Image 1 (spheres, rainbow, N blue to C red):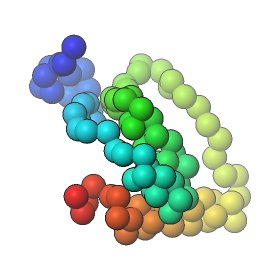
Image 2 (image 1 turned 90 degrees about the vertical axis):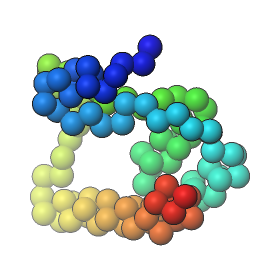
Image 3 (image 1 turned 45 degrees about the horizontal axis):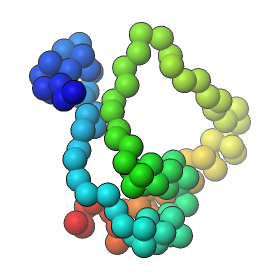
Image 4 (image 1 turned 90 degrees about the horizontal axis):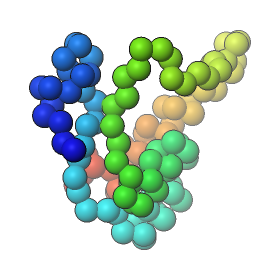
Length: 102
């Protein structure tokens, strides 16, 4: 069931809508394989694989925290994390498979 963006709870309550639905053709296997080989950001690779298998993304808003994680506790670990994120973002931006260039 498609919900008009204006009626979506995320928009009604002042939160950004995120990606509600973006219908498009699945990526071919060679494109996904190439993206996996050049992108070191594991969550992006997982997202590519899931979308290629027909999964869809939605923006999830919950009253309580739905997911919890751990954060770096010292400066060295924090800087390593930020470097990994920055490196992954640059790899995605300059990849041939980014949607910026399509």
